[in-house]
Image (cartoon, rainbow, N blue to C red; front, side, top):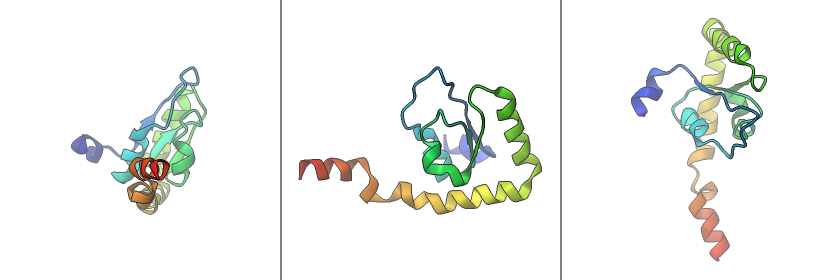
Amino acid sequence: MIRQMSDASCLVVPTRSSFVEGFNKVVVEAILAGRPVITSRVCPALLEVEAAAIEVEPDNALHYADAIETLMVDRDLFEQKVEATANLKQKFLDFDHSWLAGANAIVA
């Protein structure tokens, strides 16, 4: 998985509006790997990573293709999104925001 993610330029999460999705952890994996994300509002994780993501219209394959092309052509935007991943990483690595910390708080 690490090799696959490091070989990728970005991560596309094409969740369809007909699918009810929880927090998609692969979005966090992309951020931790320093990769921008392309997804729609259908993916709830977008709210947590907007600075490192390109939002597209749900269920529109052409919008996903356009976003991929945009990242390929606009190197400044690509670098901006990669830089944003660095700023978001700590949020996902902070123990105080972990599942275990939440469970400990409930038990306490």
